[in-house]
Amino acid sequence: MTDPIPWRVLRYLYGAYYLLVGAYVALSLVGLLPLPHPKVSNASAAFQDALVKTGFMFPLLAFTYVVSACALFFHRTAPLGLVLLAPVAVVIFFTDAVLDSAWPLGTLNAVILAALAWHFWPAYRPLWSYSAKS
Image (cartoon, rainbow, N blue to C red; front, side, top):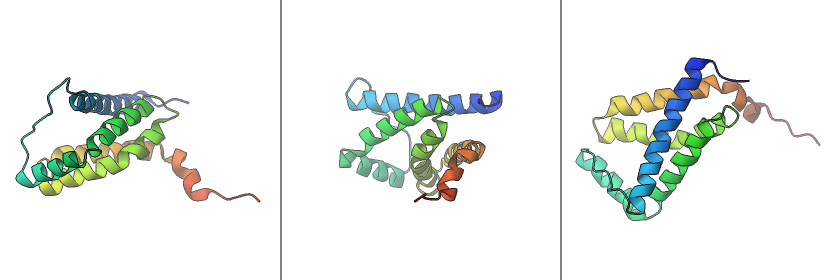
């Protein structure tokens, strides 16, 4: 089974975005590209600095972005990619909405993830209807 073309295009674009961001972050971490310095509020900059200082969050984010994006490129694994991206999308949404003024971008990111999750809702149904057989 495959997606209708509009859903497939949305899924591919969302996956491509996260693949590019993940690759950029990974290449920045190994020193091949400069780290991005977006114009953000002081609170958002402090939050991002704290994430950098942990030493593991940005490598973990890069890995999550790339793995999730690769999962989104295939219909069968797209629900897994969405599950992996859900915590990231929530943090992006609240960071953009509360700490920064980029709430339209954070909202768009969360809306696309929610729309794709709604589209793949039947894939998540077994999580709530599972019954152990003895």
